[in-house]
Length: 292
Image 1 (cartoon, rainbow, N blue to C red):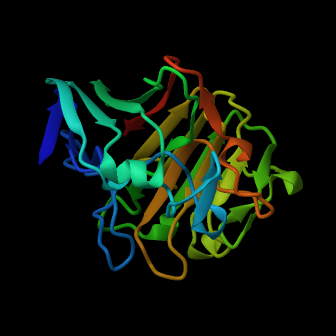
Image 2 (tube, rainbow, N blue to C red; image 1 turned 135 degrees about the vertical axis):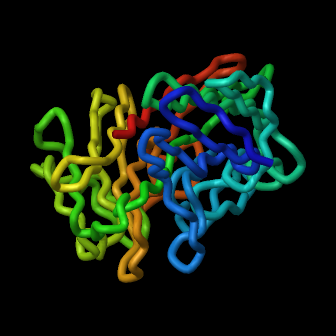
């Protein structure tokens, strides 16, 4: 099932499976800014990453003396969410623990995703709550939206560019076989990037945002159409597309967490960039997408 929210500017379609945004259409132009999800290249649109982001080392971890297996990006993207509130321009999805999640992740949790429209802006808000009376909740959360590149039939993939604001040097986190090496961050001036297939030959570009407000624009070089991603407090952002496959999209991914370090010891409580909630505490974060 899919849920539609809309106003006089845009229309958004979100699937209950994964609470995944699958379509974001500007009504004046008819442009759908979201990737089609063609499985020949990458079969998703905008998966929710929870309770991990990226890979675990050897796809497993340990907690309280037990071993658990979990594949890349966690399980939320493959779960059916409940719709607990819906209005014309606003919808709230909820996921809680079940027998399938408990086999991979031994925690009670409540995850809520809220999609809200205001003009040409779609805001996605995350709320994570620890309902336990006596157990801390360890988790990461983040986004993986894929934006169609190019947006117009007359354009090419390489007609697009990425711009970061503010224009400052940021640490870039290297990847090694999908694991991270944050101790060897390098300070780079990557505020302007030309979109090309080779840009992603070494996997995603990951930047440490230090939870500072950051805006990232993906647009054609004539600055006619594109998207503006605005995050106030993300820890990291990943920029990714397929290589060498010719997937016609670019992902801009605000993250509150990170893949395992290459030397991770596998203990969830030691995991780099993990978030922890005490019983009955909650976590709030989010970002927005403005289309133009």
